Length: 398
Image (tube, rainbow, N blue to C red; front, side, top):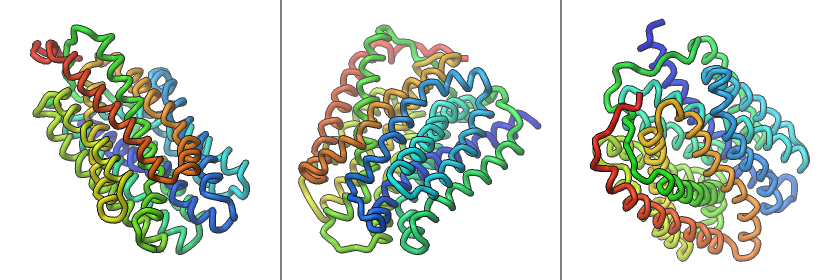
């Protein structure tokens, strides 16, 4: 197989893995509405059972970069597909709170493989970094966007268990195809344009600290918004909609995030990353404040603005890792990046349950707005710290 063919196949499966990663992880937050109706358990009780999944999503991402360096990224991505499929079937078989919590934990461990491993594979095989990051991010966002609508449709038509079984079978089928069609990791793409160029920095420790704050706070807003979105629309939109239409509206909101990621992929190749970071981060607190203080159409507009900022920032942050970290350290850097963002934000689930019980989604979204403000302040600090380095000549990363 030629290196060009291997790179194309790798990128295709990496994109599919990104879509499945976000789709499967967001099945439960929508299915829980149907599960609550069937079991008689409250939303707060059931959503709390997903704590292990979202903590594992971040916590287990830390060793995945090291494991991929040892056992191969192709092999780790194969484990992701197969493990994700089996864990979906496990959740579908659950009948009590303990079983739900256990299988969701397994699902979270499997989901942790993708981001550190898939992101490194993407950067290595990308032909044009910004464009390919944007396309990959759109795949992930479309997975997240379709999760609510597809899950609601399947749960309403065939029961909530089918909403897990069908995606599980898809994961297993894609995993088998990946093993058959992608035989190795392959070498980094030799002829790509716009490749990951190392940007020299004069104050790396300060930049790293500020970036870490932005990642942690951004992970909080990401998870609060994506996990609670179906229920927010169900309660605060002011319309008595069936589950299918609620899921469809949630999907529509996510689609705007996909558009932002496509746009950011183009802008990353044309403008400086710190400037894009500041402009995009400002939209987070603005959208969340609007959503927290309104209902109906203004609420929907606030959520659209928030999703645009949150998902667009994913592309910018991944481009920062690609361009500020040397090639030989990228897998570990992506592991740390997602460890920080997803582990801390994994505690969103119990926090969400507590805030919702105390003050409803007005309090939940207000708390998210505070984290959004922290992201914007961190982006400003990053911008000023990076000013001196941005004008220096970039050295090749590999």
